[in-house]
Image (tube, rainbow, N blue to C red; front, side, top):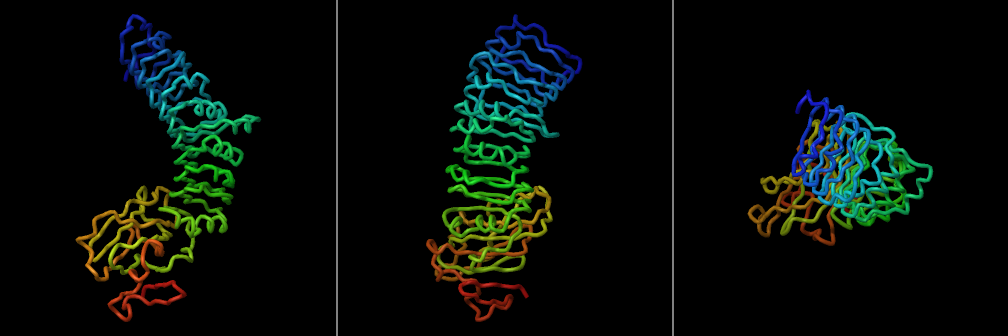
Length: 417
């Protein structure tokens, strides 16, 4: 870091230089073109050069690390003169670059790309060039972009013929995406596994999302205008749509369909809704109890919370078995500033329970969350557990003294006294 350095001079005499850093030189505004021709250079760090507006073309065949983030005046990405095969990760955070040049794809071994803004939304970002570029990069598997306002060409539909087979993790959070762009994303990134489109303005998830056969994690938090789902990816396991107040009841019913959750180990977070009818036991209060014998049963749990009391934390359920507490892995984050939600998840106990369980006896279990919830529900996966080995009332008492039960078909509703 040096405030007095304003330019990088001719460095052609340093032909064997391997590392060059002028990071956080806040008044630097000129870089000599010879910097881009150092064949032995492995590390080039220009992070935080706030007055730098342009970068010379690069022909750095040995370069392994290139830092440009927080160059808040940088107007364009440098031209890449020939293949640069050693860079695997690139960060362009808080760089006001609206277009990546076609030569960007000469970073042929790039695997991870971070770009976008932390402090403001970058307007006029060229979506067409960006998508066509990254779809031509064979090893790129992770792209994270934030706060980019996309500029779409009139012939945007031509891009639907472009497909990227390598990208598995894609984040376009807070990029102001509208309905016109979603079909393009689902067709271009058909092999994506983890997709985050939070804080977008689209209203409908189109039917073509069903073509994303590998999509297992989908995050749509705070899509305030989202109303309708016309399809669900066939292998979706983890889904979050917290802070989506316009979501219709029919779409919520589709997302809470029993068959969808019985097909696999799901973890769904939705706006606050009623516990689905297919949960056999439902309870109002800070926890829910059940009794089991032999193996721990295969169950799904539904929790409803109307008033989160914590900030920047997680919903963490615990299972207390015969007085021994076991923490479940965290579910949804509640960075969302107290938004009420309903979470449906499969409760899996991976701990060794042999020392806790009573042999050939009923074991008492309680499910409770650190941030207390209003309602709980339990559903037993009957193909994997015997209903004769689980009860929702105390098997040692004719009447549960701490609750009153009303049997409705196979369902037990419990209200705390």
